Image 1 (cartoon, rainbow over the protein chains, first blue to last red):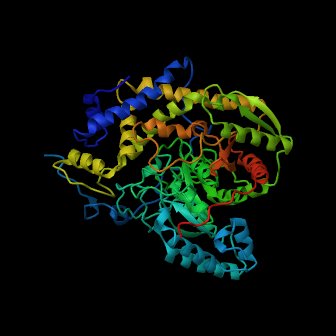
Image 2: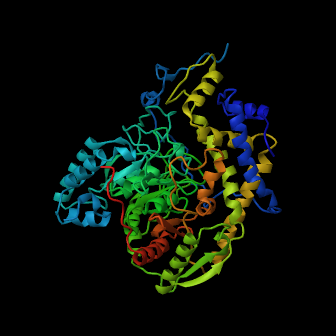
Image 3: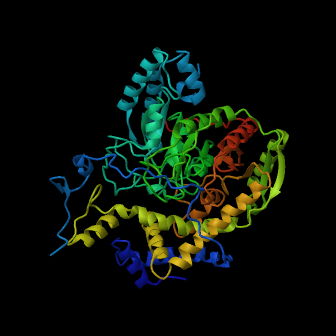
Amino acid sequence: MSVDQKTVRRIAHLARIAVTDEEVPHLQGELNAILSFVEQLNEVNVDGVEPMTSVTPMSMKKRQDGITDGGYADKIVRNAPATEDNFFLVPKVVE
Amino acid sequence: MTELTHLTISEARDGLKAKSFSATELAQAHVDAIAKARALNAYVLETPEKALAMAKASDEKLAKGEGRALEGIPLGIKDLFCTEGVVSTAGSKILGNFNPPYESTVTRNLWNDGAVMLGKLNMDEFAMGSSNETSAFGPVVSPWRNDGTHLVPGGSSGGSAAAVAAHLCLGATATDTGGSIRQPAAFTGTVGIKPTYGRVSRWGTVAFASSLDQAGPITRTVRDAAIMLRSMSGPDAKDTTCADLPVPDFEAAVSRGVKGLKIGIPKEYRVDGMSPEIEKLWHQGTEWLRAAGAEIVEVSLPHTKYALPAYYIVAPAEASSNLARYDGVRYGLRENGKDIVDLYEKTRAAGFGREVKRRIMIGTYVLSAGYYDAYYVRAQKIRTLIKRDFEEVYAKGVHAILTPATPSAAFGIGEKGSGDPVEMYLNDIFTVTVNMAGLPGIAVPAGLDQQGLPLGLQLIGRAFDEETLFAAGQVIEDAAGRIILPQPWWA
């Protein structure tokens, strides 16, 4: 499979990465090089094979559903580019 | 007396205990060496004041006879580990001046054992790369040169490997998603181990591909790797994939030898166009292990050739999810836009480098509606087959597998991957299978090529059996002799 320029723009938008007109053909070439490299996976017979879901056999650790951390909103927002009263600030989302 | 920066971790530990020198002297010697080595670009942030303050505290502990496992040992920290109050960048512009209000479990464990932080080490952006050329802070220059040509130290832990090889720390933390510890170790004549998935907590380490990422040390000897890994490892309630298993005394395994062990040689690793030098080195390693009493058997791992392409679906897919958090809202860089989507798109366009964008986009594509089964699910099925290959070999009584670490020695800066990204990806052909199967792998220096550049061998172990890798790795180190590291032409 290979991607056309329209698809490159669609993927970039899905990934929330702005791309310029000059970048699109380069990205298209690079993405197609990778897609053609992974094409060989179609040779493998995967009938009846379970997809891997856990790298090492282990059961999920569980704990009591209780509050174990928190209470420091100022610390959480300290690295944010824009904040007000311990909230993150973004452009208006809802009209 | 040997220069303080030329000691191994075990020698420094003994010297500190015997009061032959102080932790402060040891830290100062490294601080001075780092200041003279900026041409290598190995450190992105030097923390000399922190180093000296930590060393002073270590001297007080040592004076009272309360020295811990790594008391006073100066280490470099890959900039993928979040360090409290010390800017952590992951080699990217998008994190800006992110100053973590918390400490990663790995670094916390090291400080709890008395280690001293020298600074943060350069790396490929978000650990995506095999040459350290994708860093937003510029490439790392290897201390090794080929006729004066500057070489890459490998990647993504290129700063870690270069700093250890150039005597700018006694050991360094590193991470490995597809070979990022073992390949730079092989390129720089150092030792690097990627432990079993789940041996080391991933909490507080910037995520690339969560089912593949694992931290480990890069050091100058096998024994040092064993010492450092023990301190880095252990159960952690903050990481649900971190195993609740006791950490063995890895150092005790170093002198165990390989007598009676069965070592597998996988025929599928003899790839087309393999250089005769690598072939010879691999054969030499086999003979060393045989001479030390191991039984050598040929084994088959039939799905080997599919590991790298499957990796380039799984890893970008996980990366595209993990890196969705860099949106210009909660931390790091922000580029303003006319609405929130525009803000996201502009921020991510400005903050991510080319390789990272490429991988996020591949990951987004293979996870998108209509392609998920054809790409992602198929790759995860192939991953099951790769893991099964190893399980079948181990079920036949094989204790560890010997392979080359890389298909070649280090290459020049700017030499690879400018047109076709796949050219660079092929560096990880021997290492990536290990991540796909979650197994431990160690790279040990085994010789020099005709240009005088280091080459490494890789040993792959059973899950949670790093001890056998240290035992067999030591046999290779003893037989090959310690590599003579380059003279400081940069100082």
